[in-house]
Image 1 (tube, rainbow, N blue to C red):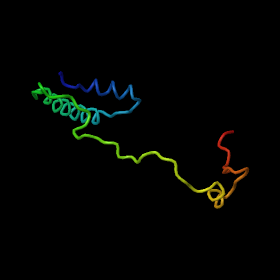
Image 2: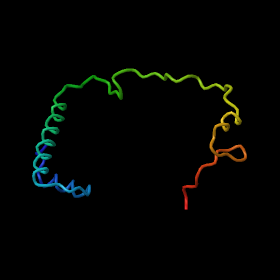
Image 3: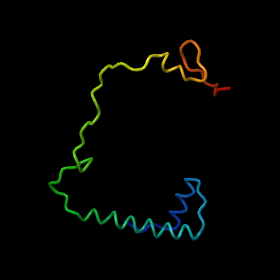
Image 4: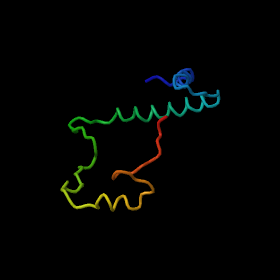
Length: 96
């Protein structure tokens, strides 16, 4: 892949509505070029016969089984509420 140019950095910054100084553009050009060079090294690795994965480790569902259980009553939930009406919490309106 070709080197990243300062003009490309400025173009992307403009698209992102970012103000970039000349010094920052130069710095980002060098940094992005080194990142791309490093990523291109991965293309040199022989991956024939290796199955694609989304994670290097097997993931297992560690969540508990969803079963009905007894929780606090409505009255217990509302007893410390600063304001409630008709069995529901009352909160300040956020819409005008």
